[in-house]
Length: 334
Ligand code: AR6
Image (cartoon, rainbow, N blue to C red; front, side):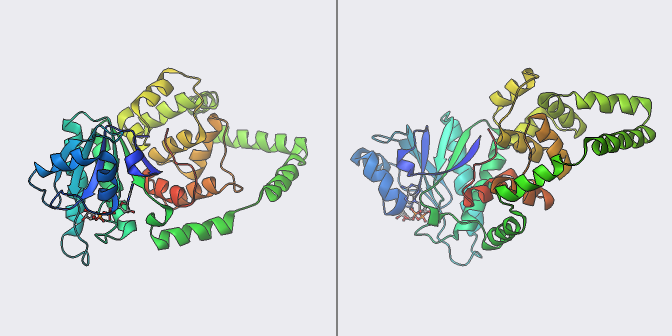
């Protein structure tokens, strides 16, 4: 997954660079800044003293010293007043400038805290959205693994409206295992003959609607593997491979593997990530999942959240991942 939201202490991240939410003096402070200086040791402060400070929205880089990270990128987020003082543009600039510096220093892995969302008071849900928007834009053009590191659960908040909408959707749709099992066995008790009859009727109707060529194509699709279906859908949507795997938050290496192995069996989150990237409808998503021998179920919160987003026509994988994270579910992507 090129962008991942993780819960951790950023000073423990073994990455090429961690980003520090600093102040304009670059001489240390509280919050994540204090934690980074504490672990890195006094040499970090000594190097920071040579930098001559840093303007809000800009970034500067130093070594990581005793940290597991090779570099620290110091950026200065805006102090949030009321959202009408250019705070958003400045916060976006922090992420952009930090990513640009990481790129110049050939960093392959970078971890960000939620800049400005502590002492500087930026509302956490909005701070997270800015982080996700800027980083995902950057990842469309660049190969890098980026982590957004959330320190504690309380520091993490998707918008209350979205959270309560999803919670309501889960309440309305959640069926416990037993109910699902009962339904399943009821379906299995439908006389076999009746289902064969239905299948034949479907086939006749299908034949009547399709020309021979269409029918041939449809029959071929029945035998398609997951990988073949994925490549066909990418072509049908007029996307390039890169557009598709980037939008799916899948890294290039995994995509190449799927591409070259006709029988590749993806994990369920990977299969769903592609369905989201291709903006498939719910029934198309089900078809694609079937190819990997999965299905969406109402006895599973993860599945219901996916269904919620597809039914709303919201295919932004990062927003979906935010919501999955908020509900303690595994994330989409590789
Ligand atoms: N790992 C990851 N995230 C952390 C950690 C950690 N170890 N510690 C805190 N956070 P803040 P700001 C989260 O206040 O709002 C300093 O004094 C925290 O929960 O560190 O940009 C500087 O010197 C919050 O979500 O930074 C500046 O004066 C996020 O990091 C000022 O604070 C940012 O909180 C900068 O304020």
